[in-house]
Image 1 (tube, rainbow, N blue to C red):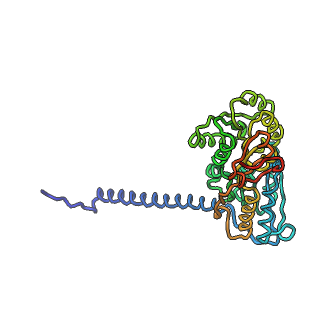
Image 2 (image 1 turned 90 degrees about the horizontal axis):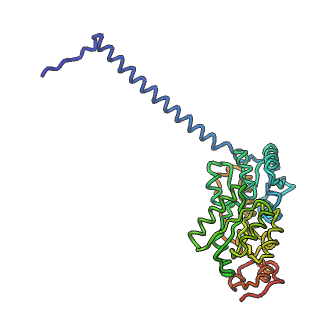
Length: 358
Protein backbone atom coordinates (compact mmCIF):
# COMPACT_ATOMS: atom_id res chain seq x y z
CA UNK A 1 0.00 0.00 0.00
CA UNK A 2 1.34 3.43 -0.94
CA UNK A 3 0.62 6.68 0.89
CA UNK A 4 0.59 9.92 -0.99
CA UNK A 5 1.63 13.02 0.92
CA UNK A 6 -0.44 16.10 0.18
CA UNK A 7 1.54 18.97 -1.07
CA UNK A 8 -0.05 22.08 0.45
CA UNK A 9 2.05 24.21 -1.80
CA UNK A 10 0.18 22.99 -4.84
CA UNK A 11 -2.57 25.28 -6.15
CA UNK A 12 -5.22 22.57 -5.60
CA UNK A 13 -4.31 22.06 -1.97
CA UNK A 14 -4.10 25.79 -1.38
CA UNK A 15 -7.64 26.00 -2.62
CA UNK A 16 -8.78 23.23 -0.23
CA UNK A 17 -7.03 24.94 2.66
CA UNK A 18 -8.86 28.16 1.78
CA UNK A 19 -12.19 26.35 1.77
CA UNK A 20 -11.49 24.88 5.21
CA UNK A 21 -10.54 28.28 6.57
CA UNK A 22 -13.74 29.81 5.17
CA UNK A 23 -15.80 27.02 6.74
CA UNK A 24 -14.17 27.57 10.12
CA UNK A 25 -14.70 31.31 9.84
CA UNK A 26 -18.38 30.72 8.95
CA UNK A 27 -18.81 28.43 11.98
CA UNK A 28 -17.25 31.07 14.25
CA UNK A 29 -19.47 33.80 12.80
CA UNK A 30 -22.61 31.68 13.26
CA UNK A 31 -21.58 30.80 16.81
CA UNK A 32 -21.02 34.48 17.64
CA UNK A 33 -24.37 35.40 16.06
CA UNK A 34 -26.16 32.72 18.09
CA UNK A 35 -24.56 33.96 21.32
CA UNK A 36 -25.62 37.54 20.51
CA UNK A 37 -29.16 36.38 19.71
CA UNK A 38 -29.45 34.50 23.01
CA UNK A 39 -28.04 37.50 24.87
CA UNK A 40 -30.62 39.76 23.19
CA UNK A 41 -33.55 37.61 24.29
CA UNK A 42 -32.15 37.29 27.82
CA UNK A 43 -31.78 41.08 27.96
CA UNK A 44 -35.30 41.52 26.62
CA UNK A 45 -36.77 39.22 29.26
CA UNK A 46 -34.75 40.82 32.05
CA UNK A 47 -35.85 44.28 30.98
CA UNK A 48 -39.45 43.02 30.96
CA UNK A 49 -39.05 41.77 34.50
CA UNK A 50 -38.13 45.24 35.64
CA UNK A 51 -40.90 47.15 33.88
CA UNK A 52 -42.20 47.53 37.43
CA UNK A 53 -39.75 49.10 39.88
CA UNK A 54 -39.63 49.36 43.68
CA UNK A 55 -41.58 52.36 44.96
CA UNK A 56 -39.28 55.30 45.68
CA UNK A 57 -39.17 56.94 49.11
CA UNK A 58 -41.27 60.11 49.35
CA UNK A 59 -43.09 62.28 51.87
CA UNK A 60 -46.54 61.44 50.55
CA UNK A 61 -47.61 58.28 48.73
CA UNK A 62 -50.60 58.23 46.39
CA UNK A 63 -52.61 55.01 46.21
CA UNK A 64 -56.00 54.00 44.84
CA UNK A 65 -58.50 51.36 45.97
CA UNK A 66 -60.47 50.19 42.93
CA UNK A 67 -63.75 48.38 43.56
CA UNK A 68 -66.92 47.57 41.70
CA UNK A 69 -69.56 50.26 42.08
CA UNK A 70 -72.28 47.74 42.97
CA UNK A 71 -70.39 46.40 46.00
CA UNK A 72 -71.88 47.90 49.16
CA UNK A 73 -69.69 46.10 51.70
CA UNK A 74 -66.89 48.42 52.89
CA UNK A 75 -65.18 46.09 55.37
CA UNK A 76 -62.39 45.24 52.90
CA UNK A 77 -61.48 48.94 52.58
CA UNK A 78 -61.62 49.28 56.36
CA UNK A 79 -59.18 46.37 56.74
CA UNK A 80 -56.83 47.85 54.10
CA UNK A 81 -56.72 51.28 55.74
CA UNK A 82 -56.22 49.92 59.27
CA UNK A 83 -53.36 47.67 58.08
CA UNK A 84 -51.69 50.65 56.40
CA UNK A 85 -52.15 52.72 59.58
CA UNK A 86 -50.59 49.98 61.69
CA UNK A 87 -47.60 49.97 59.31
CA UNK A 88 -47.06 53.73 59.61
CA UNK A 89 -48.90 54.87 56.47
CA UNK A 90 -51.63 57.24 57.62
CA UNK A 91 -54.19 59.01 55.48
CA UNK A 92 -53.65 62.77 55.56
CA UNK A 93 -50.14 62.44 56.97
CA UNK A 94 -47.97 60.55 54.50
CA UNK A 95 -50.67 58.84 52.43
CA UNK A 96 -53.33 59.98 49.97
CA UNK A 97 -56.02 57.38 49.28
CA UNK A 98 -58.51 57.59 46.43
CA UNK A 99 -61.39 55.10 46.39
CA UNK A 100 -62.90 54.59 42.94
CA UNK A 101 -66.18 52.77 42.47
CA UNK A 102 -65.90 51.47 38.94
CA UNK A 103 -68.85 51.40 36.57
CA UNK A 104 -70.35 48.07 35.54
CA UNK A 105 -70.62 49.39 31.97
CA UNK A 106 -67.56 48.10 30.09
CA UNK A 107 -66.81 51.22 28.03
CA UNK A 108 -67.16 53.50 31.05
CA UNK A 109 -65.02 51.08 33.07
CA UNK A 110 -62.22 51.20 30.47
CA UNK A 111 -62.30 55.00 30.53
CA UNK A 112 -62.04 55.06 34.34
CA UNK A 113 -59.13 52.60 34.27
CA UNK A 114 -57.25 54.60 31.62
CA UNK A 115 -57.68 57.80 33.63
CA UNK A 116 -56.51 56.00 36.78
CA UNK A 117 -53.32 54.77 35.12
CA UNK A 118 -52.60 58.29 33.84
CA UNK A 119 -53.02 59.70 37.37
CA UNK A 120 -49.54 58.49 38.34
CA UNK A 121 -50.46 56.49 41.46
CA UNK A 122 -47.67 54.79 43.40
CA UNK A 123 -49.81 51.71 43.98
CA UNK A 124 -53.27 50.38 43.08
CA UNK A 125 -55.29 47.99 45.26
CA UNK A 126 -58.02 46.11 43.39
CA UNK A 127 -60.96 44.27 44.94
CA UNK A 128 -62.16 41.19 43.05
CA UNK A 129 -61.09 39.53 39.77
CA UNK A 130 -63.00 41.94 37.50
CA UNK A 131 -61.18 45.02 38.76
CA UNK A 132 -57.85 43.19 38.86
CA UNK A 133 -58.17 42.12 35.23
CA UNK A 134 -59.27 45.62 34.20
CA UNK A 135 -56.04 47.09 35.62
CA UNK A 136 -53.46 44.41 34.86
CA UNK A 137 -54.42 44.24 31.18
CA UNK A 138 -53.62 47.97 30.91
CA UNK A 139 -50.35 48.31 32.86
CA UNK A 140 -47.24 46.30 33.71
CA UNK A 141 -45.55 49.20 35.50
CA UNK A 142 -47.85 50.21 38.36
CA UNK A 143 -47.65 47.90 41.43
CA UNK A 144 -50.99 46.16 42.02
CA UNK A 145 -52.28 44.37 45.13
CA UNK A 146 -55.31 42.23 44.21
CA UNK A 147 -57.72 41.24 46.98
CA UNK A 148 -60.28 38.47 46.61
CA UNK A 149 -58.99 36.66 43.52
CA UNK A 150 -58.98 32.88 43.24
CA UNK A 151 -56.01 30.58 42.77
CA UNK A 152 -57.56 29.59 39.43
CA UNK A 153 -57.59 33.24 38.33
CA UNK A 154 -53.94 33.72 39.34
CA UNK A 155 -52.78 30.61 37.45
CA UNK A 156 -54.68 31.65 34.33
CA UNK A 157 -54.17 35.42 34.24
CA UNK A 158 -51.28 36.37 36.51
CA UNK A 159 -48.41 34.50 34.87
CA UNK A 160 -45.56 36.91 34.04
CA UNK A 161 -47.44 39.76 35.74
CA UNK A 162 -44.46 41.04 37.69
CA UNK A 163 -46.45 44.01 39.02
CA UNK A 164 -49.06 41.81 40.75
CA UNK A 165 -49.42 40.24 44.20
CA UNK A 166 -52.40 39.91 46.51
CA UNK A 167 -54.75 37.94 48.72
CA UNK A 168 -56.48 34.80 47.45
CA UNK A 169 -60.13 34.05 48.06
CA UNK A 170 -60.28 30.43 47.05
CA UNK A 171 -63.46 28.62 46.15
CA UNK A 172 -65.10 27.11 49.23
CA UNK A 173 -67.98 25.38 47.47
CA UNK A 174 -67.05 22.00 49.01
CA UNK A 175 -67.24 23.42 52.52
CA UNK A 176 -70.46 25.24 51.66
CA UNK A 177 -72.09 22.07 50.33
CA UNK A 178 -70.88 20.00 53.28
CA UNK A 179 -72.43 22.59 55.58
CA UNK A 180 -75.72 23.07 53.70
CA UNK A 181 -76.10 19.28 53.28
CA UNK A 182 -76.33 18.96 57.04
CA UNK A 183 -79.11 21.56 57.10
CA UNK A 184 -80.91 20.76 53.82
CA UNK A 185 -80.14 17.41 52.14
CA UNK A 186 -79.29 18.26 48.51
CA UNK A 187 -79.70 16.00 45.49
CA UNK A 188 -80.21 18.77 42.91
CA UNK A 189 -78.63 22.22 42.94
CA UNK A 190 -79.03 25.14 40.56
CA UNK A 191 -75.97 27.27 39.78
CA UNK A 192 -76.46 30.79 38.48
CA UNK A 193 -74.06 32.04 35.79
CA UNK A 194 -73.84 34.78 33.16
CA UNK A 195 -72.81 34.01 29.57
CA UNK A 196 -71.52 37.56 29.06
CA UNK A 197 -68.96 37.17 31.83
CA UNK A 198 -65.98 34.84 31.26
CA UNK A 199 -65.18 34.62 34.98
CA UNK A 200 -68.75 33.46 35.62
CA UNK A 201 -68.46 30.77 32.92
CA UNK A 202 -65.08 29.60 34.27
CA UNK A 203 -66.55 29.43 37.75
CA UNK A 204 -69.45 27.25 36.55
CA UNK A 205 -67.04 24.84 34.81
CA UNK A 206 -64.84 24.62 37.89
CA UNK A 207 -67.78 23.97 40.20
CA UNK A 208 -69.08 21.21 37.94
CA UNK A 209 -65.67 19.51 37.99
CA UNK A 210 -65.43 19.76 41.78
CA UNK A 211 -69.00 18.65 42.49
CA UNK A 212 -68.83 15.71 40.09
CA UNK A 213 -65.73 14.42 41.88
CA UNK A 214 -66.94 14.91 45.44
CA UNK A 215 -70.75 14.67 45.45
CA UNK A 216 -73.48 12.70 43.74
CA UNK A 217 -75.44 15.87 42.98
CA UNK A 218 -77.36 16.78 39.84
CA UNK A 219 -76.40 20.28 38.62
CA UNK A 220 -78.85 22.60 36.89
CA UNK A 221 -77.37 25.51 34.91
CA UNK A 222 -79.32 28.74 35.45
CA UNK A 223 -78.31 31.37 32.93
CA UNK A 224 -78.89 34.94 34.11
CA UNK A 225 -79.50 37.35 31.21
CA UNK A 226 -81.99 39.70 32.84
CA UNK A 227 -84.55 39.60 35.63
CA UNK A 228 -87.48 38.51 33.45
CA UNK A 229 -85.41 35.70 31.97
CA UNK A 230 -84.36 34.61 35.47
CA UNK A 231 -87.95 34.54 36.79
CA UNK A 232 -88.97 32.40 33.82
CA UNK A 233 -86.15 29.90 34.43
CA UNK A 234 -86.89 29.66 38.16
CA UNK A 235 -90.54 28.94 37.36
CA UNK A 236 -89.42 25.95 35.27
CA UNK A 237 -87.01 24.42 37.80
CA UNK A 238 -88.50 25.38 41.18
CA UNK A 239 -89.76 21.83 41.78
CA UNK A 240 -86.52 20.26 40.51
CA UNK A 241 -83.93 21.88 42.78
CA UNK A 242 -83.23 21.66 46.51
CA UNK A 243 -81.12 24.84 46.63
CA UNK A 244 -79.61 27.50 44.38
CA UNK A 245 -76.03 28.71 44.46
CA UNK A 246 -75.36 32.36 43.52
CA UNK A 247 -71.65 33.23 43.10
CA UNK A 248 -70.38 36.64 44.15
CA UNK A 249 -70.48 38.77 41.02
CA UNK A 250 -71.19 42.45 40.41
CA UNK A 251 -73.76 41.53 37.73
CA UNK A 252 -76.00 39.96 40.38
CA UNK A 253 -75.54 42.69 43.00
CA UNK A 254 -77.75 45.20 41.23
CA UNK A 255 -80.56 42.63 40.93
CA UNK A 256 -79.97 40.75 44.16
CA UNK A 257 -82.94 42.12 46.14
CA UNK A 258 -85.32 41.03 43.36
CA UNK A 259 -83.52 37.69 42.88
CA UNK A 260 -83.66 36.83 46.56
CA UNK A 261 -87.33 37.84 46.85
CA UNK A 262 -88.28 35.51 44.00
CA UNK A 263 -86.32 32.58 45.47
CA UNK A 264 -87.61 33.21 49.00
CA UNK A 265 -91.18 33.32 47.68
CA UNK A 266 -90.57 29.90 46.12
CA UNK A 267 -89.06 28.62 49.42
CA UNK A 268 -85.76 27.75 47.70
CA UNK A 269 -82.68 27.99 50.00
CA UNK A 270 -79.91 30.20 48.60
CA UNK A 271 -76.19 29.57 49.08
CA UNK A 272 -74.01 32.56 48.33
CA UNK A 273 -70.38 33.67 48.30
CA UNK A 274 -70.41 36.60 50.69
CA UNK A 275 -71.72 37.95 53.99
CA UNK A 276 -73.44 40.86 52.23
CA UNK A 277 -75.58 38.43 50.23
CA UNK A 278 -76.53 36.56 53.42
CA UNK A 279 -77.46 39.86 55.00
CA UNK A 280 -79.70 40.56 51.98
CA UNK A 281 -81.55 37.24 52.26
CA UNK A 282 -79.38 34.27 51.28
CA UNK A 283 -79.46 31.43 53.78
CA UNK A 284 -75.77 30.58 54.07
CA UNK A 285 -72.25 31.44 52.99
CA UNK A 286 -68.87 29.94 53.80
CA UNK A 287 -66.35 32.59 52.86
CA UNK A 288 -63.08 34.26 53.74
CA UNK A 289 -63.84 37.15 56.09
CA UNK A 290 -63.67 40.44 54.20
CA UNK A 291 -62.01 42.54 56.91
CA UNK A 292 -59.24 39.96 57.31
CA UNK A 293 -58.67 39.84 53.54
CA UNK A 294 -58.50 43.63 53.47
CA UNK A 295 -56.07 43.76 56.38
CA UNK A 296 -53.76 41.18 54.78
CA UNK A 297 -53.91 43.11 51.50
CA UNK A 298 -53.06 46.31 53.36
CA UNK A 299 -49.99 44.65 54.89
CA UNK A 300 -48.79 43.63 51.40
CA UNK A 301 -49.34 47.20 50.20
CA UNK A 302 -47.31 48.54 53.14
CA UNK A 303 -44.38 46.25 52.26
CA UNK A 304 -44.40 47.62 48.71
CA UNK A 305 -44.53 51.22 49.97
CA UNK A 306 -41.49 50.45 52.14
CA UNK A 307 -39.55 50.11 48.86
CA UNK A 308 -36.74 47.76 47.76
CA UNK A 309 -39.19 45.12 46.55
CA UNK A 310 -41.56 44.56 43.62
CA UNK A 311 -44.93 42.74 43.77
CA UNK A 312 -43.84 39.44 42.18
CA UNK A 313 -41.31 39.03 45.02
CA UNK A 314 -44.20 38.86 47.51
CA UNK A 315 -46.15 35.59 47.52
CA UNK A 316 -49.93 35.67 47.26
CA UNK A 317 -51.49 35.35 50.72
CA UNK A 318 -53.97 32.48 51.04
CA UNK A 319 -56.93 32.87 53.42
CA UNK A 320 -57.36 29.42 54.98
CA UNK A 321 -59.76 30.04 57.88
CA UNK A 322 -63.19 30.82 56.40
CA UNK A 323 -66.25 32.03 58.28
CA UNK A 324 -69.75 30.55 58.18
CA UNK A 325 -72.55 33.12 57.86
CA UNK A 326 -76.16 32.03 58.44
CA UNK A 327 -79.30 34.12 58.05
CA UNK A 328 -81.40 32.92 60.97
CA UNK A 329 -84.52 34.72 59.73
CA UNK A 330 -84.36 32.69 56.51
CA UNK A 331 -83.71 29.49 58.44
CA UNK A 332 -86.89 30.16 60.41
CA UNK A 333 -88.96 30.88 57.28
CA UNK A 334 -87.73 27.65 55.70
CA UNK A 335 -88.33 25.77 58.99
CA UNK A 336 -84.73 24.56 59.12
CA UNK A 337 -82.85 23.38 62.19
CA UNK A 338 -79.17 24.27 62.56
CA UNK A 339 -76.89 21.50 63.97
CA UNK A 340 -75.29 22.59 67.24
CA UNK A 341 -71.66 22.51 66.01
CA UNK A 342 -72.52 24.70 63.01
CA UNK A 343 -74.55 26.97 65.30
CA UNK A 344 -71.58 27.46 67.62
CA UNK A 345 -69.13 28.23 64.83
CA UNK A 346 -71.34 30.35 62.56
CA UNK A 347 -71.79 34.10 62.52
CA UNK A 348 -75.55 34.38 62.93
CA UNK A 349 -77.46 37.23 61.27
CA UNK A 350 -80.93 38.26 62.52
CA UNK A 351 -80.58 35.88 65.45
CA UNK A 352 -83.41 37.56 67.32
CA UNK A 353 -85.77 36.24 64.59
CA UNK A 354 -84.28 32.74 64.59
CA UNK A 355 -84.38 29.67 66.78
CA UNK A 356 -82.08 27.75 69.08
CA UNK A 357 -79.84 24.94 67.92
CA UNK A 358 -80.81 21.27 68.10
